[in-house]
Image (cartoon, rainbow, N blue to C red; front, side, top):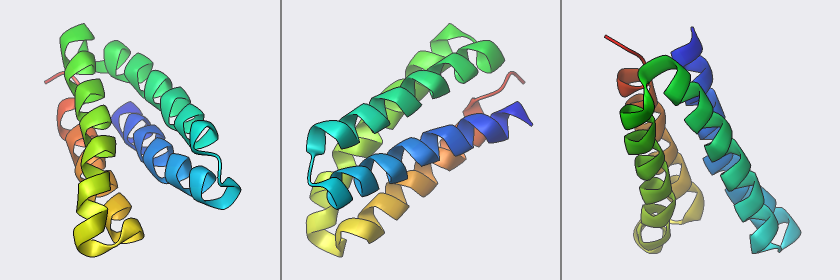
Length: 99
């Protein structure tokens, strides 16, 4: 169940960070939402899967955020955010817990 929670937190960070930045016009505020959720997800991943996996998943989280930008030029902003969020949620479910 906690791997589901970390997946939801990371998804909320990617979706909520983008929505916050878009709705407020304040990219830094969106980044703060993204960072806060990322820190919370890291803590959950560390507890559930260990430090190494938590670090790898956090790197994936940051990479997903970065990848959403060039991907948005190809497919649009929201489809891009949904795509990277889905990939991150799947990675969190698969790798965010001990075997």
